[in-house]
Image (cartoon, rainbow, N blue to C red; front, side):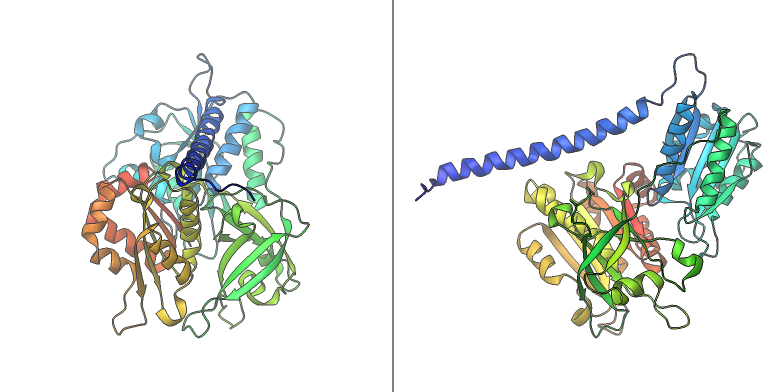
Length: 469
């Protein structure tokens, strides 16, 4: 029989394992920072190369940022000096000192600027009586949007109009892209090649769709007044190892149905609710209904028509602006509703796997749904994390459980003092869920409680991150 370790020896072994885990987390974080720094340094110009081309992104889910880096690398290969930056990092002196600027701008909701570009939109674009002269600047704008919204590409179009109003000269007409339309992106590459004086640029590499097998589907809220929500589990159909991803990342699902037409060409995005260590991609999907009463294309397929052990085309997509980033050692305030719990759950799973001590790694969860009897998704898991000390506070808002509607923003108002204390203690805020109603209302409470300047500071510091849809 193997010898039994003494208590001191067992304690020393646990400490050693803990230190190894901390070292691994620290090393992985430093490696990501080093890779980002190396990528930026590779684009820096030589001393005599003149002002770099500004490649500026306004990104909500990371797509605009990804396209900005692809743009910058293509220009760099053509021999041009390039600087990549978020639009929120740019001021009027940066614009006045540049000769050329390329803008890749997403739209948030119904025409608003993404969070990362909000300071630019407020301090420069919305400034009354601005005398900013951009007549020495040549610009090109790629506007990303979704034509299902009323103000399609609203922010990109507003940015384009503002640049022209202040005298900027167009290298080419603005290009509008509907959900990363390949034709629009091909136009952008062609314009870049003309600007760089090269032959047409090669197609940019994009993650390919692969076949994933549905291994489990579980109805989470039978009897709910809301639409049915399902827990899904998927693994690579060919049995290959799982690709790497981080909490906060997304999957894109492509459903090619015979009667879907062009709509099938637009992949749907879902926030991943699990980690690679779980051995599968887990999703929370609500079945949406069209105006004619039929299920939505992708959600209807995933939650009903796709049989167990059936396959679906899927690819993973990094979502840098909703990852933990530099907030690994901070307390977390996690706010969400409905299927937005998916992204918050992934962050809680990551925190459970790597937390160093209860005080510095604790989380405060505020979650909203309709009925406590039917919509308390993953309640047992959340209760266990709370008993274990990972979650310091779990506040639930069930809007249909009483005559007066209660939502997550009301919980934030109710706990305004705790909110101020956690933020003062360095906590980071992550908001995941519906754009309409929840996200705007939560932002309004934050600004009323903390003040606009502090909220904007949280955005600039990466301590206020949103994944809303």
